[in-house]
Length: 419
Image 1 (spheres, rainbow, N blue to C red):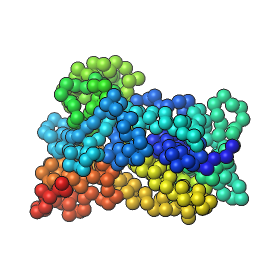
Image 2: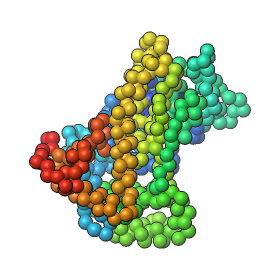
Image 3: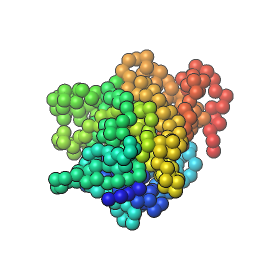
Image 4: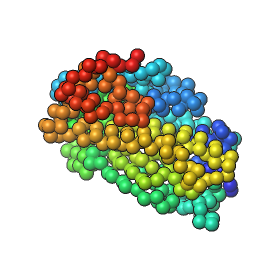
């Protein structure tokens, strides 16, 4: 079997790349080791940059109110205290002036459209086994399909690894990676939505505690509770009632919805990792998304950046197909276009992790002070929001801006947010 591009991994980036290429008439095979579409709860926030990509793929209109919940305001609240800051997406230009909270909806829409394209194939239950090489360069992939005893060889001009943080494709391509496992992860549960929580999300920050509550489709709420990754077993040993009591103590409105939580099986652990690689492309091979650059979810851009990778790489693939040149040099423009924003967001996410996850009084004091400063400063609030929305490639705040946000310097332009 021969294709132009073989993509390992049908996550957000892999599916977007497959669909973008198919719409260009490029023959593409997307292989996914899972037996079918994702069924495990995965709440996701579709930021404005992701919405723009979905519009380019003619998919945004498929995200109806039944599958996404629009959220315009995100309130940051000190646990046991007052509201610190509100990020209002209404500050952004229309029509992408809101976030969309979904429950696997985008993933399912992408995967449903992909096989319908004449030049695309999607194979579930297909495990990546290795790379084919010819004259020292990548020439395709080896796959083991579910139920088959022997492997299948697929020749491809380009092999793309979209297979996540622990990417097997990355390893097979010989691209070294620095994988950092964050101390904290998140427990995620889908619960009934409390009354009055419409169009607004709540993010509680405390001393070593975080609780995020995001309205989701179907009058539900996605609850994220930060936990030390190596302390999950100890937390479970304390009992579900203790966990529910702590969440209720942070937000009393969750007391009633938490009654529906009756088993730990309803709670999913999301570990967090960062991936850094010295290159994303080799002759006949490329990485996108978490395989190339996983980041802490504080940035709210992990999946969006994978989608942006896919669109940028698709453009480069179009040129490579015309010239027949699939070398690392020909593919390098994809990496050059994408690295600045990705690395900025990784640094930003690490900075947010350093302060938002803090338990000591000094960092918590500075964190809360900056939040309050942003709430008073429309210019800086807009700049911070454009980073979360994926609409900028440069750091949202300079050191001078940070001093102004913390109230150590005056800002004569505090009210000069773009209109």
